[in-house]
Length: 132
Image (cartoon, rainbow, N blue to C red):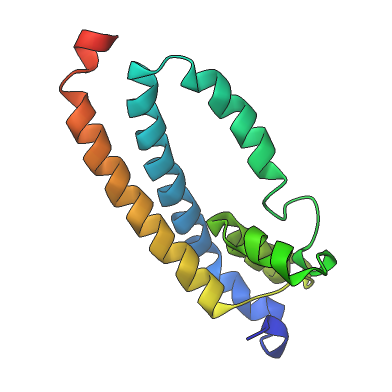
């Protein structure tokens, strides 16, 4: 469902939810990578490069509607941040796309990443002092 049926101003109430999803996804990824970088020190260098690379896989500097190839659009939408950024764009600027299914996908991926981050962090936490 494209969000053109929903007025952009009505999506302003979703902003706290979008910030919460984004924050929890960042927390989960942060816990995973902080646990891994205690053992693999070079991962920090790769992570800095990966964050810059993934910025281009998220429609931050370009709208999702500018991608015409459906294969590439599917790849971009596999990134859980894409629907969050597009919803922000639609709510504040009135352009872009909005989809409840894409937001649900982002929320599900966020929960999975957060749970994985908690589990990995708690397992590695016991050996932090040994490796640091």
